[in-house]
Image 1 (cartoon, rainbow, N blue to C red):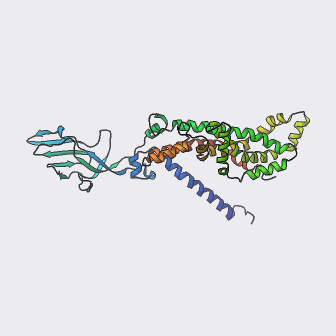
Image 2 (image 1 turned 135 degrees about the vertical axis):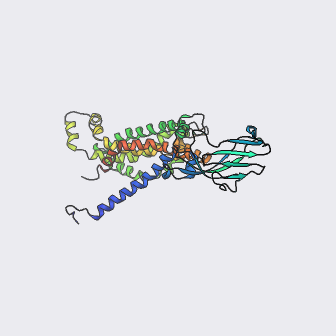
Image 3 (image 1 turned 30 degrees about the vertical axis):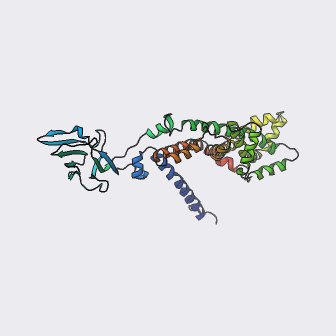
Length: 382
């Protein structure tokens, strides 16, 4: 049905709603990851990220001062103090002296201690212990409190992950290792594929149609089939495990898509432009470098986004061709897997590490996304 002025067909509304749904489905977890990376472990365990701006209720186990701090007042031994520091703001709603009844008392009530004496705790965390006999022992009394804490955001997680080299949670080395893998593995296939795409698009030679068909066929070949044979080949020729091997592997696996995208785009450029350049005496190399490459920037940027995201988020190829027993060449994806195994309960560290790993791809995507659609649709219509 043709569009009526001032109305939109139902199919267009479905497309728009689907796009909004997919964007929301992607943005909400990313936003939650970002917020969680600035929260403390206690806040993450007690409330969801959507309540990060509101006070949270937590159960804490604290101790009173040691018996050695007691003083004698009017024949009564007294220990008093504050459960929280001067810079801590918290309001106690319930408290107790037994792990079985952590909420047995309200603020201001008095509890009988098992070893004699009494203790009183107010809402601000101030306590007073009294006993007609001297308090004994080396440690203070355990006090279980249910408190309402204000929201807290901290940069300590990022300091541990990025700046603290002595921390076992540091990802700084893995970050630079990932950059070392990703940047060459993105540039090399673009350089090689651009030459091949130009030849397949504008140069006549025997077997060109077969080469184009072979490139299309290689798009559907799973890379997992080539991992072990390619690794054996690298070991036989002396490359072994290292950056060169992973660069060549990513180049080989990304080449079919690169040639396919660039060839389709270059084939859609005006033929008159190429013919006029040849009439003016330009060589094929001059035509390629001075005309084709500048005009093909959208397609180059489109493939660069795909290749960068794939190599940055890759774990399988890095495991096979790069990472060794020393761990000196580990990448961020593998480092996150290690943190998940050793720090499974430290969600604040895992959230920070995960957001650091997706931050760079987000910057690359949003910086170059205007070329993405142009590069993908090039050559699809005439």
